[in-house]
Length: 264
Figure 1 (tube, one colour):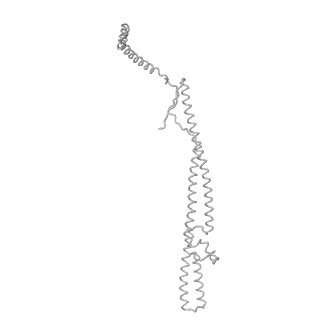
Figure 2 (cartoon, one colour):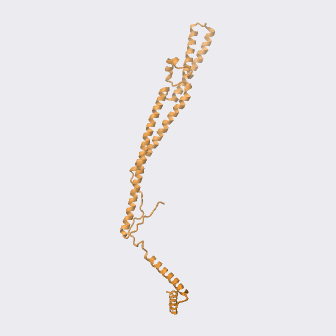
């Protein structure tokens, strides 16, 4: 359960109690210093890591900006929807003009002004459609390409560009989430570093003992008595076993036996 006891054994009871209390206070101080040191190291690491991540975010932001400028991307989803809508409108107009051109071919001569006008309109819409879908090189149609560039890249390039745009955007989002997490941990580390609360809860303060812990006189007396009794019995049996003893010694042995066997 994390509980422990501090025991101090010296000749002076009062000094022993003071030393035990001082040891507890010193241990608490060491624990606090260690915790503050650990929190300081963690804070320094988090600050350093946040600086690195901030640099990575700035680099990713610049890369995403260059990518958008290079391909004319602002809002990929909105630009894609706008391009599709423009293409749909052009296809509708082109279909209608092709029908009108087909009718004029049956009714008008080839060099007729109205027939030539319809033909030019159809060709122009086809060029615009090819520019939007990316089937016509922009260099050959620089003016028209500049007009449609505000809509974003050609339609056939959107899948690949969309994947790259998504990758760059996800990198930015991940780094932003990392720096948010690191920021929370940094504040926690700063709080722990500034926190100065006791690390030990003293359940019982040390007081001068009423009885000494050593030497234990009662135990010593009991051990000495038992030892002398055992030695006396052993000595009696040894003396009895000696066959060459005189009568006087035998009388002494008998007396010792009676003494040992007599109730106290």
